[in-house]
Image 1: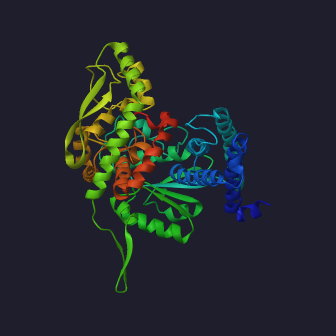
Image 2 (image 1 turned 120 degrees about the vertical axis):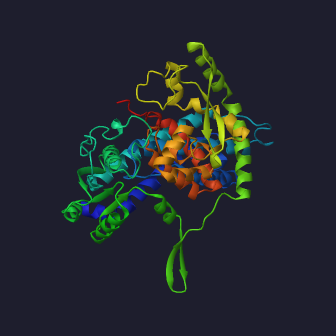
Image 3 (image 1 turned 90 degrees about the vertical axis):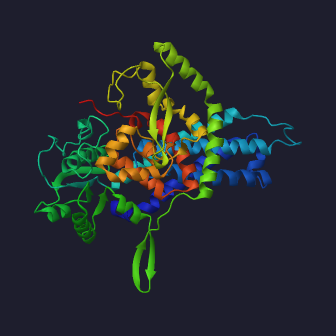
Length: 484
Protein backbone atom coordinates (compact mmCIF):
# COMPACT_ATOMS: atom_id res chain seq x y z
CA UNK A 1 0.00 0.00 0.00
CA UNK A 2 2.78 2.41 0.96
CA UNK A 3 4.75 1.72 -2.20
CA UNK A 4 1.67 2.27 -4.34
CA UNK A 5 0.92 5.57 -2.59
CA UNK A 6 4.54 6.63 -2.96
CA UNK A 7 4.34 6.12 -6.74
CA UNK A 8 1.30 8.38 -6.93
CA UNK A 9 2.34 10.76 -4.15
CA UNK A 10 2.28 13.94 -6.24
CA UNK A 11 -1.04 13.03 -7.81
CA UNK A 12 -2.62 12.29 -4.42
CA UNK A 13 -1.39 15.60 -2.93
CA UNK A 14 -2.63 17.42 -6.03
CA UNK A 15 -6.03 15.73 -5.59
CA UNK A 16 -6.14 16.84 -1.93
CA UNK A 17 -5.32 20.37 -3.08
CA UNK A 18 -8.18 20.34 -5.60
CA UNK A 19 -10.59 18.96 -2.98
CA UNK A 20 -9.55 21.67 -0.50
CA UNK A 21 -10.05 24.50 -2.99
CA UNK A 22 -13.29 22.91 -4.18
CA UNK A 23 -14.60 22.78 -0.62
CA UNK A 24 -13.64 26.44 -0.05
CA UNK A 25 -15.31 27.39 -3.33
CA UNK A 26 -18.49 25.53 -2.36
CA UNK A 27 -18.54 27.15 1.09
CA UNK A 28 -18.41 30.63 -0.44
CA UNK A 29 -20.92 30.17 -3.26
CA UNK A 30 -23.44 27.93 -1.48
CA UNK A 31 -23.65 30.17 1.59
CA UNK A 32 -23.88 33.40 -0.38
CA UNK A 33 -26.49 31.78 -2.62
CA UNK A 34 -28.88 31.85 0.35
CA UNK A 35 -29.51 35.55 -0.32
CA UNK A 36 -28.02 35.71 -3.83
CA UNK A 37 -29.51 32.86 -5.81
CA UNK A 38 -28.17 34.28 -9.07
CA UNK A 39 -24.54 33.32 -8.27
CA UNK A 40 -25.28 29.59 -8.69
CA UNK A 41 -27.49 30.01 -11.76
CA UNK A 42 -26.62 30.73 -15.37
CA UNK A 43 -26.28 34.50 -15.16
CA UNK A 44 -23.86 37.36 -15.74
CA UNK A 45 -23.49 37.78 -11.98
CA UNK A 46 -22.51 34.12 -11.59
CA UNK A 47 -19.97 34.31 -14.43
CA UNK A 48 -18.31 37.50 -13.14
CA UNK A 49 -18.28 36.34 -9.51
CA UNK A 50 -16.88 32.93 -10.39
CA UNK A 51 -14.19 34.48 -12.59
CA UNK A 52 -13.23 36.98 -9.90
CA UNK A 53 -12.94 34.27 -7.26
CA UNK A 54 -10.86 31.98 -9.49
CA UNK A 55 -8.48 34.70 -10.74
CA UNK A 56 -7.86 36.24 -7.29
CA UNK A 57 -7.35 32.78 -5.76
CA UNK A 58 -4.84 31.89 -8.49
CA UNK A 59 -2.88 35.15 -8.14
CA UNK A 60 -2.76 35.10 -4.34
CA UNK A 61 -1.84 31.41 -4.25
CA UNK A 62 1.14 32.22 -6.46
CA UNK A 63 2.10 35.11 -4.16
CA UNK A 64 1.74 33.43 -0.77
CA UNK A 65 2.42 29.86 -1.84
CA UNK A 66 -0.30 27.28 -2.01
CA UNK A 67 -0.55 23.72 -0.70
CA UNK A 68 3.22 23.26 -0.18
CA UNK A 69 2.94 20.00 1.75
CA UNK A 70 6.33 18.64 2.80
CA UNK A 71 8.14 21.81 1.70
CA UNK A 72 7.07 24.20 4.46
CA UNK A 73 6.07 23.93 8.10
CA UNK A 74 2.42 23.17 8.69
CA UNK A 75 1.76 26.50 10.42
CA UNK A 76 3.36 28.44 7.54
CA UNK A 77 1.20 26.59 5.00
CA UNK A 78 -1.89 27.23 7.12
CA UNK A 79 -1.15 30.96 7.51
CA UNK A 80 -0.62 31.29 3.75
CA UNK A 81 -3.85 29.47 2.91
CA UNK A 82 -5.88 31.41 5.47
CA UNK A 83 -4.57 34.77 4.26
CA UNK A 84 -5.17 33.79 0.64
CA UNK A 85 -8.69 32.63 1.49
CA UNK A 86 -9.64 35.75 3.47
CA UNK A 87 -8.36 38.17 0.80
CA UNK A 88 -10.08 36.17 -1.96
CA UNK A 89 -13.35 36.16 -0.01
CA UNK A 90 -13.18 39.90 0.71
CA UNK A 91 -12.41 40.92 -2.87
CA UNK A 92 -15.10 38.63 -4.31
CA UNK A 93 -17.57 39.79 -1.66
CA UNK A 94 -17.08 43.45 -2.59
CA UNK A 95 -17.32 42.58 -6.29
CA UNK A 96 -20.63 40.81 -5.61
CA UNK A 97 -21.86 43.79 -3.58
CA UNK A 98 -21.01 46.14 -6.45
CA UNK A 99 -22.80 43.83 -8.91
CA UNK A 100 -25.94 44.03 -6.73
CA UNK A 101 -25.95 47.82 -6.84
CA UNK A 102 -28.62 48.24 -9.52
CA UNK A 103 -32.27 49.13 -9.91
CA UNK A 104 -33.42 45.56 -9.29
CA UNK A 105 -31.57 45.14 -5.97
CA UNK A 106 -29.87 48.06 -4.20
CA UNK A 107 -30.05 51.51 -5.77
CA UNK A 108 -26.99 52.54 -3.72
CA UNK A 109 -23.90 50.65 -2.60
CA UNK A 110 -24.85 48.72 0.52
CA UNK A 111 -22.83 46.44 2.80
CA UNK A 112 -24.84 43.31 3.56
CA UNK A 113 -24.44 39.58 4.24
CA UNK A 114 -21.61 40.30 6.72
CA UNK A 115 -22.71 37.36 8.87
CA UNK A 116 -22.48 35.04 5.87
CA UNK A 117 -19.01 36.39 5.04
CA UNK A 118 -17.80 35.67 8.60
CA UNK A 119 -19.34 32.17 8.43
CA UNK A 120 -17.56 31.48 5.13
CA UNK A 121 -14.20 32.55 6.59
CA UNK A 122 -14.67 30.34 9.65
CA UNK A 123 -15.70 27.31 7.58
CA UNK A 124 -12.78 27.82 5.20
CA UNK A 125 -10.39 28.05 8.16
CA UNK A 126 -11.61 24.63 9.32
CA UNK A 127 -11.26 23.25 5.78
CA UNK A 128 -7.69 24.55 5.48
CA UNK A 129 -6.79 23.22 8.94
CA UNK A 130 -8.15 19.74 8.17
CA UNK A 131 -6.48 19.48 4.76
CA UNK A 132 -3.11 20.75 6.01
CA UNK A 133 -3.14 18.21 8.83
CA UNK A 134 -4.30 15.49 6.45
CA UNK A 135 -1.70 16.38 3.83
CA UNK A 136 1.14 16.46 6.36
CA UNK A 137 0.07 13.17 7.93
CA UNK A 138 0.01 11.55 4.50
CA UNK A 139 3.34 13.01 3.35
CA UNK A 140 5.30 12.11 6.48
CA UNK A 141 3.65 8.69 6.64
CA UNK A 142 5.19 8.03 3.23
CA UNK A 143 8.48 9.86 3.70
CA UNK A 144 10.96 9.57 6.53
CA UNK A 145 13.00 12.60 7.52
CA UNK A 146 15.85 13.25 5.08
CA UNK A 147 19.19 12.17 6.52
CA UNK A 148 21.24 15.37 6.21
CA UNK A 149 25.01 15.72 6.09
CA UNK A 150 26.37 19.24 6.64
CA UNK A 151 29.70 19.96 4.97
CA UNK A 152 31.82 22.82 6.33
CA UNK A 153 35.25 24.34 5.50
CA UNK A 154 38.41 22.70 6.79
CA UNK A 155 39.59 23.47 10.31
CA UNK A 156 42.22 26.21 10.34
CA UNK A 157 43.18 28.05 13.48
CA UNK A 158 41.03 28.42 16.56
CA UNK A 159 37.26 28.07 16.43
CA UNK A 160 34.38 28.76 18.78
CA UNK A 161 33.49 25.88 21.05
CA UNK A 162 30.28 25.02 19.23
CA UNK A 163 28.90 21.52 18.83
CA UNK A 164 27.52 21.71 15.31
CA UNK A 165 25.65 18.45 15.73
CA UNK A 166 23.54 19.79 18.60
CA UNK A 167 20.36 20.75 16.79
CA UNK A 168 18.17 21.00 19.84
CA UNK A 169 18.68 24.71 20.40
CA UNK A 170 20.04 27.73 18.58
CA UNK A 171 23.67 26.71 18.17
CA UNK A 172 25.65 29.23 16.19
CA UNK A 173 23.11 32.03 16.35
CA UNK A 174 23.45 32.23 20.11
CA UNK A 175 27.19 32.88 19.89
CA UNK A 176 26.94 36.06 17.84
CA UNK A 177 27.01 39.30 19.77
CA UNK A 178 25.81 41.56 16.98
CA UNK A 179 25.27 41.98 13.28
CA UNK A 180 28.95 42.14 12.46
CA UNK A 181 30.35 39.41 10.28
CA UNK A 182 33.20 39.03 12.75
CA UNK A 183 36.16 38.13 10.53
CA UNK A 184 34.21 38.28 7.29
CA UNK A 185 32.40 35.69 5.21
CA UNK A 186 35.66 34.22 3.94
CA UNK A 187 36.88 33.52 7.46
CA UNK A 188 36.64 29.80 8.10
CA UNK A 189 35.77 30.12 11.78
CA UNK A 190 32.84 32.34 10.87
CA UNK A 191 31.56 29.79 8.37
CA UNK A 192 31.95 26.91 10.83
CA UNK A 193 30.10 28.85 13.51
CA UNK A 194 27.33 29.72 11.05
CA UNK A 195 27.02 26.02 10.20
CA UNK A 196 25.55 25.58 13.68
CA UNK A 197 22.81 27.98 12.69
CA UNK A 198 22.21 25.90 9.57
CA UNK A 199 21.81 22.80 11.72
CA UNK A 200 19.37 24.63 13.99
CA UNK A 201 17.38 25.84 10.99
CA UNK A 202 17.07 22.27 9.71
CA UNK A 203 16.08 21.11 13.18
CA UNK A 204 13.16 23.56 13.10
CA UNK A 205 11.67 21.31 10.42
CA UNK A 206 12.53 18.04 12.13
CA UNK A 207 9.83 16.06 10.35
CA UNK A 208 11.58 16.62 7.03
CA UNK A 209 15.26 16.98 8.00
CA UNK A 210 17.42 14.94 10.36
CA UNK A 211 21.02 16.15 10.78
CA UNK A 212 23.13 13.09 11.44
CA UNK A 213 26.63 14.56 11.14
CA UNK A 214 28.84 17.53 10.20
CA UNK A 215 32.09 16.89 8.32
CA UNK A 216 34.91 18.99 6.93
CA UNK A 217 35.18 19.23 3.17
CA UNK A 218 38.64 17.62 3.13
CA UNK A 219 37.55 14.61 5.17
CA UNK A 220 39.10 11.45 3.63
CA UNK A 221 35.79 9.58 3.91
CA UNK A 222 33.68 12.45 2.53
CA UNK A 223 32.42 10.50 -0.47
CA UNK A 224 31.39 7.57 1.69
CA UNK A 225 29.56 9.91 4.09
CA UNK A 226 27.71 11.50 1.16
CA UNK A 227 26.57 8.06 -0.05
CA UNK A 228 25.12 7.37 3.42
CA UNK A 229 23.10 10.61 3.35
CA UNK A 230 19.85 11.55 1.61
CA UNK A 231 20.64 15.26 1.50
CA UNK A 232 23.91 17.21 1.48
CA UNK A 233 24.02 20.75 2.86
CA UNK A 234 27.11 22.88 2.17
CA UNK A 235 27.85 26.19 3.88
CA UNK A 236 30.72 28.41 2.69
CA UNK A 237 32.46 25.46 1.06
CA UNK A 238 35.13 26.62 -1.46
CA UNK A 239 33.82 26.67 -5.02
CA UNK A 240 36.26 24.11 -6.43
CA UNK A 241 35.40 21.57 -3.70
CA UNK A 242 31.72 22.39 -3.97
CA UNK A 243 31.81 21.49 -7.66
CA UNK A 244 33.31 18.09 -6.89
CA UNK A 245 30.72 17.45 -4.17
CA UNK A 246 27.87 18.43 -6.52
CA UNK A 247 29.19 16.11 -9.22
CA UNK A 248 29.37 13.23 -6.74
CA UNK A 249 25.90 14.00 -5.34
CA UNK A 250 24.44 14.14 -8.86
CA UNK A 251 26.06 10.81 -9.68
CA UNK A 252 24.60 9.25 -6.52
CA UNK A 253 21.15 10.88 -6.71
CA UNK A 254 21.49 13.01 -3.56
CA UNK A 255 19.60 16.21 -2.74
CA UNK A 256 21.85 19.28 -2.59
CA UNK A 257 21.64 22.55 -0.66
CA UNK A 258 24.35 25.24 -0.72
CA UNK A 259 24.42 28.92 0.18
CA UNK A 260 24.93 31.14 -2.87
CA UNK A 261 27.59 33.70 -3.68
CA UNK A 262 27.35 36.62 -6.08
CA UNK A 263 28.45 34.43 -9.01
CA UNK A 264 25.70 31.90 -8.21
CA UNK A 265 23.01 34.60 -8.22
CA UNK A 266 24.23 35.96 -11.55
CA UNK A 267 24.32 32.45 -13.01
CA UNK A 268 20.80 31.79 -11.77
CA UNK A 269 19.57 34.90 -13.59
CA UNK A 270 21.52 34.26 -16.78
CA UNK A 271 20.16 33.10 -20.12
CA UNK A 272 21.18 30.13 -22.21
CA UNK A 273 22.91 31.24 -25.40
CA UNK A 274 24.52 29.36 -28.27
CA UNK A 275 27.11 31.24 -30.34
CA UNK A 276 27.85 29.23 -33.44
CA UNK A 277 27.96 25.78 -31.82
CA UNK A 278 29.30 26.84 -28.40
CA UNK A 279 26.96 26.89 -25.38
CA UNK A 280 27.11 29.83 -22.98
CA UNK A 281 25.33 31.24 -19.99
CA UNK A 282 25.05 34.99 -20.54
CA UNK A 283 24.31 37.71 -18.03
CA UNK A 284 23.97 41.28 -19.27
CA UNK A 285 24.75 44.15 -16.92
CA UNK A 286 21.57 46.09 -16.20
CA UNK A 287 20.07 48.63 -13.82
CA UNK A 288 16.49 49.67 -13.27
CA UNK A 289 15.32 51.54 -16.37
CA UNK A 290 14.09 55.16 -16.46
CA UNK A 291 10.54 53.98 -17.18
CA UNK A 292 10.66 51.54 -14.28
CA UNK A 293 11.90 54.28 -11.95
CA UNK A 294 8.96 56.52 -12.91
CA UNK A 295 6.36 53.79 -12.34
CA UNK A 296 8.04 52.65 -9.12
CA UNK A 297 8.08 56.23 -7.81
CA UNK A 298 4.40 56.77 -8.66
CA UNK A 299 3.51 53.49 -6.95
CA UNK A 300 5.52 54.56 -3.88
CA UNK A 301 3.77 57.93 -3.67
CA UNK A 302 0.26 56.56 -4.08
CA UNK A 303 0.54 53.52 -1.79
CA UNK A 304 2.58 55.32 0.92
CA UNK A 305 0.10 58.23 1.01
CA UNK A 306 -2.87 55.84 1.29
CA UNK A 307 -1.12 53.83 4.03
CA UNK A 308 -0.35 57.01 5.98
CA UNK A 309 -4.06 57.83 5.99
CA UNK A 310 -5.19 54.27 6.82
CA UNK A 311 -2.63 53.80 9.61
CA UNK A 312 -3.06 57.30 11.08
CA UNK A 313 -4.98 55.95 14.13
CA UNK A 314 -2.14 53.49 14.82
CA UNK A 315 0.45 56.25 14.34
CA UNK A 316 -1.40 58.54 16.75
CA UNK A 317 -1.91 55.87 19.43
CA UNK A 318 1.75 54.81 19.18
CA UNK A 319 2.94 58.41 19.52
CA UNK A 320 0.77 58.96 22.61
CA UNK A 321 1.99 55.71 24.22
CA UNK A 322 5.65 56.57 23.61
CA UNK A 323 5.23 60.07 25.05
CA UNK A 324 3.25 58.83 28.04
CA UNK A 325 5.74 56.04 28.77
CA UNK A 326 8.77 58.21 29.57
CA UNK A 327 8.03 61.69 28.26
CA UNK A 328 10.84 61.52 25.71
CA UNK A 329 10.92 62.21 21.99
CA UNK A 330 8.49 60.27 19.80
CA UNK A 331 10.61 59.81 16.70
CA UNK A 332 14.08 58.35 16.38
CA UNK A 333 16.22 59.81 13.59
CA UNK A 334 19.38 58.25 12.22
CA UNK A 335 21.64 58.63 9.19
CA UNK A 336 21.29 55.78 6.72
CA UNK A 337 22.63 55.00 3.23
CA UNK A 338 20.46 54.55 0.15
CA UNK A 339 21.05 54.30 -3.63
CA UNK A 340 24.58 55.19 -4.75
CA UNK A 341 25.61 55.75 -1.15
CA UNK A 342 23.48 58.87 -0.68
CA UNK A 343 22.90 59.60 3.01
CA UNK A 344 19.46 60.47 4.38
CA UNK A 345 17.79 60.68 7.78
CA UNK A 346 15.45 57.78 8.51
CA UNK A 347 12.37 58.13 10.74
CA UNK A 348 11.27 55.46 13.21
CA UNK A 349 9.22 55.41 16.38
CA UNK A 350 11.62 55.52 19.32
CA UNK A 351 11.64 52.08 20.96
CA UNK A 352 14.68 52.53 23.23
CA UNK A 353 15.44 54.77 26.17
CA UNK A 354 16.94 58.11 25.30
CA UNK A 355 20.67 58.83 25.55
CA UNK A 356 21.76 55.18 25.38
CA UNK A 357 24.47 53.57 23.27
CA UNK A 358 23.48 53.36 19.61
CA UNK A 359 24.03 49.77 18.51
CA UNK A 360 21.91 46.90 17.20
CA UNK A 361 19.45 45.39 19.66
CA UNK A 362 20.23 42.16 21.47
CA UNK A 363 18.00 39.58 23.11
CA UNK A 364 16.43 40.92 26.34
CA UNK A 365 18.02 44.31 25.65
CA UNK A 366 17.33 46.53 28.67
CA UNK A 367 17.55 49.64 26.47
CA UNK A 368 14.19 48.77 24.87
CA UNK A 369 11.14 50.30 26.59
CA UNK A 370 7.99 48.34 27.39
CA UNK A 371 6.11 50.20 24.66
CA UNK A 372 9.04 49.70 22.30
CA UNK A 373 8.89 45.91 22.63
CA UNK A 374 5.33 45.88 21.32
CA UNK A 375 6.12 48.31 18.51
CA UNK A 376 9.17 46.30 17.41
CA UNK A 377 7.35 42.95 17.61
CA UNK A 378 4.71 44.00 15.10
CA UNK A 379 6.97 46.31 13.05
CA UNK A 380 4.87 49.33 14.01
CA UNK A 381 8.07 51.28 14.75
CA UNK A 382 8.80 51.21 10.99
CA UNK A 383 5.57 53.01 9.97
CA UNK A 384 7.04 56.57 10.14
CA UNK A 385 9.28 55.53 7.24
CA UNK A 386 6.22 56.04 5.03
CA UNK A 387 7.18 59.74 5.32
CA UNK A 388 10.66 58.87 4.02
CA UNK A 389 8.99 57.16 1.07
CA UNK A 390 6.80 60.16 0.29
CA UNK A 391 9.89 62.40 0.47
CA UNK A 392 11.72 60.14 -1.97
CA UNK A 393 14.47 58.97 0.40
CA UNK A 394 13.19 55.39 0.32
CA UNK A 395 11.01 53.09 -1.73
CA UNK A 396 8.32 50.69 -0.55
CA UNK A 397 10.41 47.72 -1.71
CA UNK A 398 14.20 47.58 -1.76
CA UNK A 399 17.30 46.66 0.26
CA UNK A 400 17.03 47.61 3.94
CA UNK A 401 18.92 50.87 4.69
CA UNK A 402 21.85 50.10 6.97
CA UNK A 403 23.49 52.32 9.58
CA UNK A 404 26.50 54.15 8.14
CA UNK A 405 28.84 52.41 10.58
CA UNK A 406 27.59 48.99 9.46
CA UNK A 407 27.95 49.89 5.78
CA UNK A 408 31.61 50.75 6.32
CA UNK A 409 32.32 47.66 8.43
CA UNK A 410 30.47 45.25 6.15
CA UNK A 411 32.01 46.64 2.98
CA UNK A 412 35.48 46.35 4.47
CA UNK A 413 34.88 42.72 5.42
CA UNK A 414 32.70 41.83 2.41
CA UNK A 415 33.40 44.08 -0.63
CA UNK A 416 30.30 42.77 -2.44
CA UNK A 417 28.16 44.56 0.18
CA UNK A 418 28.38 47.77 -1.86
CA UNK A 419 26.34 46.14 -4.66
CA UNK A 420 23.14 46.48 -2.63
CA UNK A 421 23.46 50.28 -2.94
CA UNK A 422 22.55 50.01 -6.62
CA UNK A 423 18.89 50.22 -5.61
CA UNK A 424 17.04 52.72 -3.44
CA UNK A 425 16.58 51.53 0.14
CA UNK A 426 13.17 50.03 0.92
CA UNK A 427 10.70 49.58 3.74
CA UNK A 428 10.31 45.92 2.83
CA UNK A 429 12.08 43.42 0.60
CA UNK A 430 13.52 39.92 0.38
CA UNK A 431 15.74 40.33 3.44
CA UNK A 432 12.90 41.77 5.53
CA UNK A 433 10.39 39.09 4.51
CA UNK A 434 12.53 35.96 4.42
CA UNK A 435 15.24 37.03 6.85
CA UNK A 436 15.28 37.92 10.52
CA UNK A 437 16.69 40.86 12.44
CA UNK A 438 19.69 38.71 13.38
CA UNK A 439 20.22 37.10 9.96
CA UNK A 440 23.92 37.28 9.09
CA UNK A 441 25.10 40.13 6.87
CA UNK A 442 26.26 37.71 4.17
CA UNK A 443 22.84 36.06 3.98
CA UNK A 444 21.04 39.44 3.99
CA UNK A 445 23.29 40.59 1.16
CA UNK A 446 22.45 37.53 -0.93
CA UNK A 447 18.72 38.09 -0.35
CA UNK A 448 19.06 41.74 -1.41
CA UNK A 449 21.01 40.77 -4.53
CA UNK A 450 18.34 38.21 -5.41
CA UNK A 451 15.83 41.06 -5.35
CA UNK A 452 17.99 43.43 -7.40
CA UNK A 453 18.76 40.83 -10.07
CA UNK A 454 15.12 39.62 -10.23
CA UNK A 455 13.63 43.11 -10.13
CA UNK A 456 10.25 43.75 -11.73
CA UNK A 457 7.21 45.82 -10.82
CA UNK A 458 5.17 42.62 -10.52
CA UNK A 459 7.74 41.29 -8.05
CA UNK A 460 7.37 44.50 -6.01
CA UNK A 461 3.61 43.98 -5.79
CA UNK A 462 4.09 40.34 -4.75
CA UNK A 463 6.56 41.35 -2.02
CA UNK A 464 4.14 43.97 -0.69
CA UNK A 465 1.48 41.28 -0.31
CA UNK A 466 4.00 38.86 1.24
CA UNK A 467 4.95 41.47 3.83
CA UNK A 468 1.60 40.82 5.50
CA UNK A 469 2.86 37.34 6.43
CA UNK A 470 5.64 38.92 8.52
CA UNK A 471 3.00 39.92 11.07
CA UNK A 472 2.09 36.24 11.58
CA UNK A 473 5.68 35.33 12.39
CA UNK A 474 6.54 38.43 14.39
CA UNK A 475 8.53 36.46 16.99
CA UNK A 476 10.80 34.98 14.30
CA UNK A 477 11.26 38.03 12.07
CA UNK A 478 12.16 40.33 14.98
CA UNK A 479 14.45 37.82 16.72
CA UNK A 480 17.38 39.86 18.05
CA UNK A 481 21.07 39.09 18.38
CA UNK A 482 22.21 37.33 21.52
CA UNK A 483 23.99 39.51 24.05
CA UNK A 484 26.21 36.64 25.14
